[in-house]
Image (cartoon, rainbow, N blue to C red; front, top):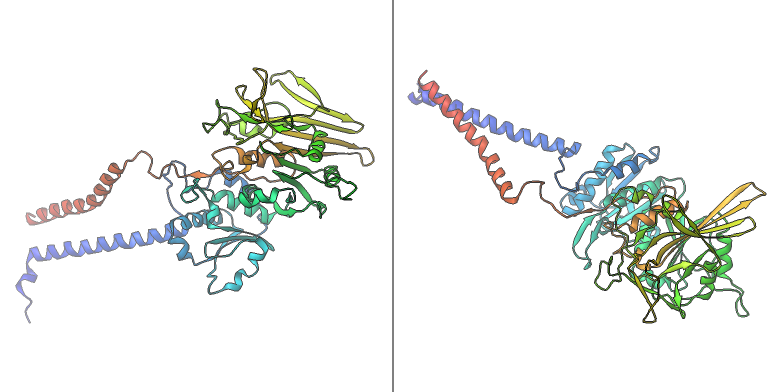
Length: 519
């Protein structure tokens, strides 16, 4: 049987070769793209071109993780399938951070659990953590220690709590991984029987933050319970009811418990605001440590500073960093950046040195004053951490408080006690950090655009309450555009990159056909 004549035609043969070559090239490109995509996904090959950069582990996160005990395996469990976590934009960002951490550290493993098909895999987690387990939960565990976080905790939100403003996943992951691999988690006890529970119910950001930076949290009814021996930090957050002293009607003294607790190497934080009522027992106790709430006729000061406030009413002042004494040690790393973050004290009252103390003035490269008191082997010093500008004013009971032109109001004080124990030949150190604003630790203020979160972390480190405080900046979604490329330019590049291969193939084909025709 003779082949059709057109099969022997020179043009047909050249055309067939061209078509076959085109098919081979297209197939090769498709296979290359598929293989490269698979390898990129497996090995996390990418170029982060966001300005922040948002999708790359920060140097701070890497530094913290380098200090992790890598002899202990850390398992990050996602409570759904991998496909489900990859299919959602916000979930994929959390997954990406975990994958980067697992790639950098051999002791970090990822697991995906379909909790509907295997509910026993997370049995008991809700009871241990006090949080509900669902398909958007992430569990970080090592041995018997675990931390569980909901997807929402990895992000920050605007004031409506509806719109995501930033990604805080590095802070969540790093603090949890360090916490579960530490030999011993430091315990923070928060008192709840003086009105503090009401504040925690409305905004528990301070407890969440303390958990994130490395504490195990326990709520404490001080009238009924003793302070645990392993408590490293006692938190008194916005009390509205006074602490108990022994009396004819009560043999319980919460003040005695505070004194006994602070006689060791322990620390305490106490937060007040411009509505703190008179608390005679607690205020007398703090006065013995050099800390007093500024009052006029028992009315707390309400500080306003229009020159620095973030709000028009002057009630959200930006504080001035103290640069001298132990109080300044808390903020030393922040100030070393050259452009320290703003630290805000919303709805602040004012603090002052207690009358019992002697105020000393140090004149050096950085001049400052502090207060001191000594009795036997016990020495107590009180330092400023933050204060107002000289433009700040204060009202008490609606009346303007008189002040000197250059006078500043204290927003935060640090009291330090040193006790020389001659029997053991050791020195014990204790601390009380007092804030004039409960809103200093509110969800809005610990947003990492401000320095409040970092101040609390560094304060815990300075006071020795926490060995590894974690403070990593949030990555805000200020821009998702590729740097230097507008939307119009991006469209132009897309068109060029799409047409260039086709045009190149067309030109090459024409040249080849012409040359062969006249060969």
